[in-house]
Length: 220
Image (cartoon, rainbow, N blue to C red; front, side, top):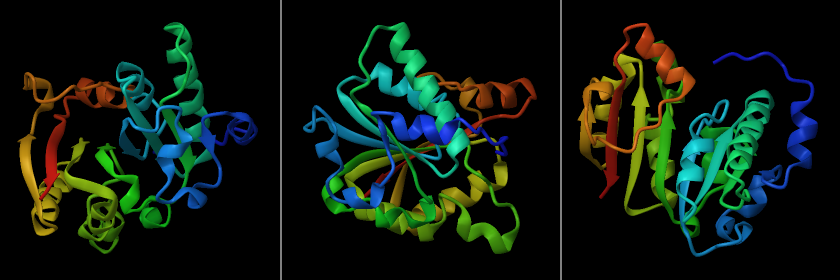
């Protein structure tokens, strides 16, 4: 998703207590950055404007979350959205961190000792041209990296509006040794599929008549 440059974003992020500007320094030791280091650890790849992370983290105070994006403008908006959500509930922001990094190189900032329990991938770039498929966040090239820090039995929650990406991803996960626990080609019509959070992006697709595809894949 393209977004206009936000001149305020970089300064706000650098001043934020829950933004990490040097993520490579914390590989294998992310948990020590959270007040409750013993809590389970979950990750959102490509957090965008923060519609998802601001809600899921607030709903689960017993879980630590790390949200990653590579665009300052996106992260700046995500920061503000997290602040607003927690402020409205009069809660301290103590279980969510944001950081800027290229997800294609995620193995540089997360390792086996980080013990990620769940990964969320929401509406990532489908990279539709064949020569760009390796850039997909669900491509086997990426899945092999996630396996290094995802615990045994850990899961990836994935949803997309793009049918081609979804069908290919089903193959990618199996090819990389994951087990598909659940799948649907119309998430809105499913009951109790998962604890779904509809962001502005997702609602926009639904209003356009585009069915949301989703799956849960488990590391085995």
